Length: 220
Image 1 (tube, rainbow, N blue to C red):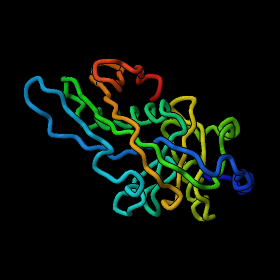
Image 2: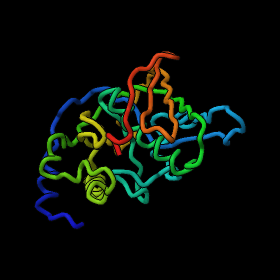
Image 3: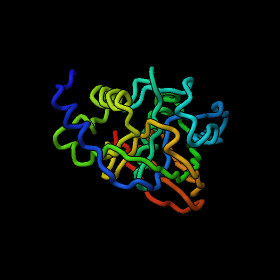
């Protein structure tokens, strides 16, 4: 879908100093899964442990087709202002990856996630609230509009943007420049408990104690 020039003009004028320095909880799409074990042992996945928290998505061989990039010209670092938002975002991608890769797997699947907080020092385009005018900003499956917008902002030399999450009511950030991110701090480890025959994923921060649950039907 082509986007009228007047829309680009309006969007490009939305830059304002929301917070020049703030913290973001990291989320990204790279995922590592061990081989499917025999017997009753759970499949264990440890995403985010095998890459560098800030630099990974900016390395050309790691570029991926994501909401604000087609993966052919630039990478994007994604994070959230709230811890809960980044959980909803990563639950979606983890579930999608596992259901696509191991659709017939019946045993429990454990995803271990390392959560970081990262400092962002930048002037960002603030698109929060603009999803009412441009609903494709939060389209859950079609990224054409967002990818065109991302390419436009990169060409304009913008640092990144803030936008409502498509999975929940929180705020996501898409950062286009690695140098705007620094001071990576470990926050905690999380465990996602998944069974593909159940549509509910439980999240643990303390082993054996459920932090909250996510219904896949609410985020797909």
